[in-house]
Length: 523
Image: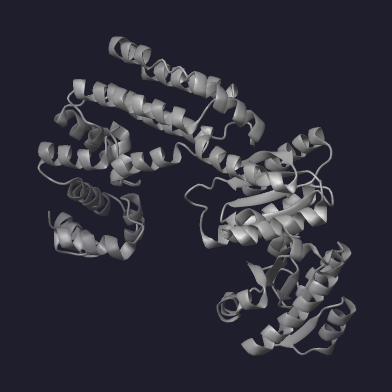
């Protein structure tokens, strides 16, 4: 019931790969996922990690031939249809490809139409091999209609037909949710997520256990699980979650529904959807519907205790931010461990912490904007409710900033002098506003204003003048090449360095060096 077709293109010529990706209509052909590799080492890694049904490969490549790749595939007995796309019409190549049971052998250049026809033939062979799972695609459609259809009539028809097929068989409805960071939410990651979730469900579950896997969105799937041994099912879910977290390198949570007949899964679906909204995944990657229902009834009777008042008092007395951070994280872990941590709880805790922070800063004559880059703070706040670890990251970020801010002298002159000292010692390094702001635990906009008020020049102008002063010194006192001097004062682009130097001095670096040498000789 997981009939998705994935294709791997292997060619050391990037232009060929890009042309195939742009011109072939993979969606209309029924190919769900397209991956690329530039050599057989990369290709083997992908083939080991995920199921590939179709391989489109060049033959002659620098680090190993396509024929060697196909030979490896046949040795591993991977069910892959292979199309060779080669610049050479050598009989020996075609003969070897035939011996290795290659589906097609095309000689470049080929038209898009020719390639799509060859792909259609390969897809047909893939589908024919999967025919022993005959009724699965129809059943998958029924499950989708039963669980996702907004049309009441279609929903009832699908539920009735599934009941006819399965009778009183019990299933567990599960949500598999990936929580990607901001760097892993693009189209390529979506393809990779789909392939790895599908392949690992196949790998971890015994045949017949995974009744259906339905993609809900880029990072979420519904898994209908058939398992007569509930204890064994818990073990498998833990194993599946750990495996997915390892191969994806992203947090993963399984929201696991109770066992029930087809007609009872709608109730489980509603509970799981509410769980997703209400619950923050913790260190245990599998959350159970039964535990959540108990939590709901417990929280209805009594809320979670948050000792915010004692934190306020402690902050006023000692301003020990690291100790308060530890208390907040301990409180978080205690609640999470007891299975009673909810989004509502974290939001209440977040509100109290920000009130505490705002009050503390105002007593010192400061505001949030003076310490935090507000966009950065907002990004951390948005991420905070994804998982318990995201929340911990937010708390550490917040209190480390406050701790650093407390240790720094806030006088404008002191901040400006601190920045000047750092700039002077690090002219070769990155001197972005973000880097400088981190040195004094203040926001980028705030240090810009302070520096301008105290020094009368902008940070950017000051850095440029100090770098040019250092460059002039190197030009006069050393025999270093101009390109090396540029690097020593923080310019990786030689042309930009020369232009900046000329704008500030009126001459090029070489002209300046010659002029100073001449002046010394005349003395």
